[in-house]
Image 1 (tube, one colour):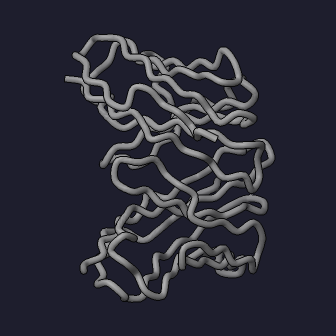
Image 2 (image 1 turned 90 degrees about the horizontal axis):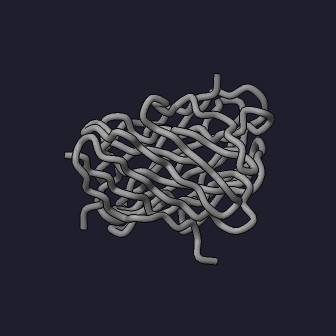
Amino acid sequence: GNSVTQMEGPVTLSEEAFLTINCTYTATGYPSLFWYVQYPGEGLQLLLKATKADDKGSNKGFEATYRKETTSFHLEKGSVQVSDSAVYFCALRVGNRDDKIIFGKGTRLHILP
Amino acid sequence: DAGVIQSPRHEVTEMGQEVTLRCKPISGHDYLFWYRQTMMQGLELLVYFNNKAVMDDSGMPKDRFSAKMPNASFSTLKIQPSEPRDSAVYFCASSYSIDNSPLHFGNGTRLTVT
């Protein structure tokens, strides 16, 4: 079946540090891949997406590259800010008849000033 | 575009009472999803609809939960009777058709059952 595995949190970094949150997936077919972010008291928001192998999604300084050979979609940011503190979810959507979106368990990120 | 609208934002009720959560999806979206989020279980898919029809409700405890979508702009999730273990944040999300369409989430309903 389809699944998403992302690194356990919480992740605590100092402001301006480099961020990587690992995400790997298992899917039948050719999934689209997503990163969502959830700020306190809010619903999930789409951060970025990639729809085919070697695509790079980017938004707000975050990037992730769809790596089919390693079935990965790691989230990176070169210099984090306190305002990036949130929970980050990796997700996939295969389409066909099994068209629900599959989420990872989320990674909580704390950025210290 | 007002986004996905959920009501109420907070609900506190006593065990055994009926609870109804409401959702208005984004106009034109033909998929609607109900999720439950807890610290222990994370984000769980309860049920989802395509064009108002239930596609998968395998994540929903059907003895006490029911979900309806009477028209394209409104959905309800009902819990009867409610139990303390139902305490969670319930999210509604909607999207266009499948493949690379992202979900758009509401701000959730925080349910507390005492």
